[in-house]
Length: 278
Image 1 (cartoon, one colour):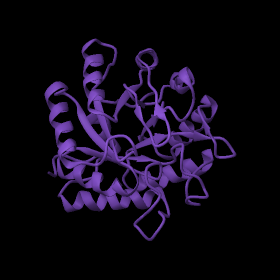
Image 2 (cartoon, rainbow, N blue to C red):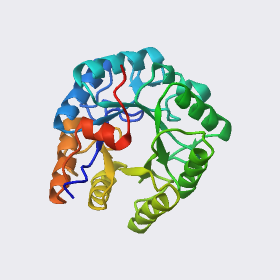
Image 3 (tube, helix red, strand yellow):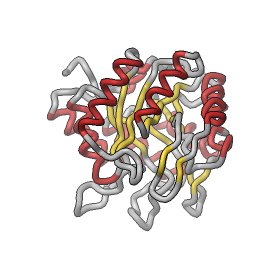
Image 4 (cartoon, rainbow, N blue to C red):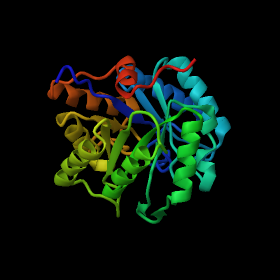
């Protein structure tokens, strides 16, 4: 599969892990920029971004996102920058308050589902507003599919013109109370995307101990993948991850096992049709 390079996205921080869980989690903007640079040099070509306050609490502050984007652009030239509009980072339209900064991409969940201790609520009204903001500011969505219905909803939105650009669908598996890690379901997700969104590229994220399994399935079956300390703070059962780059290195090794190269940032932008912004 040398002609099918694998895009590695690194989710560096998220909203949940704290220094108490793993002291290597990057929290401040400066820590995140440094961690992203290390992961970029290890082979990650997309960075999935959240921001935090000084007390490690979650934030949707556009000023913090702007500082983070500026630093990544300076130190990781060409890397695709993806902001999170996820529900842990704010309420309602706060979740899209950073979209006017015009990152390359932003995550978009197009339906609701259960999380470990709460409902991850995404109302049709909010989804449509976030989609309009992404179109307005030239931000390509990455659809985060926590459920089969989310793939169908994404296809409907693309067909109706509510979403623009090349579809990129990410299957999220292993969240407690949501979709478990199941190989048959995983393969059916791929089959469904190929059937109803044939122009789409796909990737997947595995949570916690499932990260390596999902990385392997993605790479084996010809898709792209996501790693990073947002989803998993451990290198293995006995050891905490020393960095995001260490998790990217593990994913790169899996690519080698299946004869796939790791996509450069240039290849990633070509695959996803995301031009460099002036």
